[in-house]
Length: 99
Figure 1 (cartoon, rainbow, N blue to C red):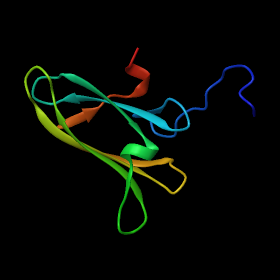
Figure 2: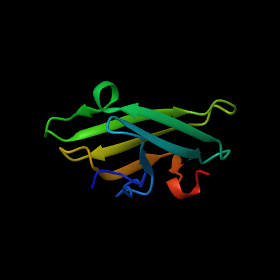
Figure 3: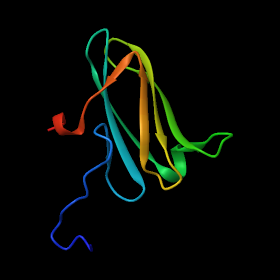
Figure 4: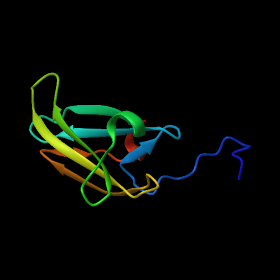
């Protein structure tokens, strides 16, 4: 209820980690060379709204070593809960595999 014992709520989406009320993180692996790239984004600065009133975060990916290219999109509902993820040229890494 009040997070008294340091427990975090389980994320509804296995690929998007919510650090706090404003911040999200995603890790992707490029398909050609398998490079891992992490992205951090916030509600106020990075998440946009489309013509239908839905929230989304779209990010092109360029890996630092081999310059592999891809793109991913994270879709949210009006309460910033992740509804779905899409990727092209990259694969999402589940949060459970990050450590």
